[in-house]
Amino acid sequence: MSIVIIEDDLRVSGFLERGLKSEGFLVQCCSDGKDAIDLVLQVQPALIILDRMLPNIDGIELCSRMRAKGITAKILMLSALHEVPDRVLGLNRGADDYLGKPFAFEELLARIQALLKRNSAPSAEQLIKLGELEYDKSALQVNRAGVAIKLTAKELQVLDLLLSQPGKVFSRERILANVWGMNTDPLTNVVDVYVRRLRRKIDDDFNAKYIQTFRGIGYSISADAMQVS
Image 1 (cartoon, rainbow, N blue to C red):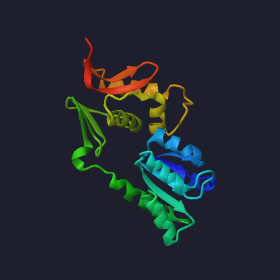
Image 2: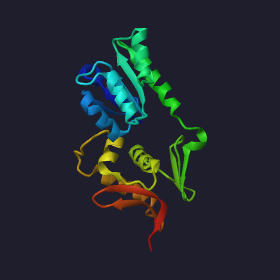
Image 3: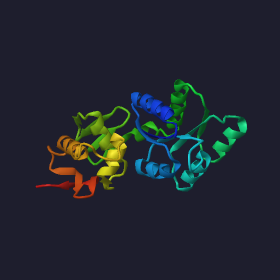
Image 4: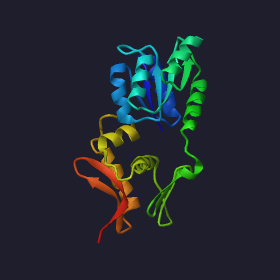
């Protein structure tokens, strides 16, 4: 699950990043409101932690702009301004929750979990089927043609992203940002390595291949598995 932190106080953002990563979240940080919307559009996080007092663009205005651009991620606003009128203003401008500073990390985490539950799909939608490929998101189990396939956590995250929009070509940069929380690849080919591992487990033992490569662009998982003779 991906979270973007928009906070100009590096001590606060660093604390939040370490704490949330330890809870298993993928975390990206941004300290400037000017760059925040581009980052959010690229990462497409499930949740945004937004500081109200930001340089260049105030958090209230930034919240309004994100909603105007169709960004639907849950927004948890943080601010030392936490009187009733301040909270009401933030909520009216598009925030889903408002937490005053200073705060306890346990409360922040509880609020994050409560917000993310609002996005949780009904249990019937936790099972994704694509032809003979099935992915049970609640149990983190994958099988093809009734045969269980054991995947690592990163392989599952890559598969989950590809399955989120079958047929869509995901760039290496998009996969890197969503799965590894990075905008650049210091390992040069980590995405290619993991997609190759995923393909070996899902496709190699079958004539029909689900994972497609678009050279120079990225990868896709096709709703119609391609037959290879």
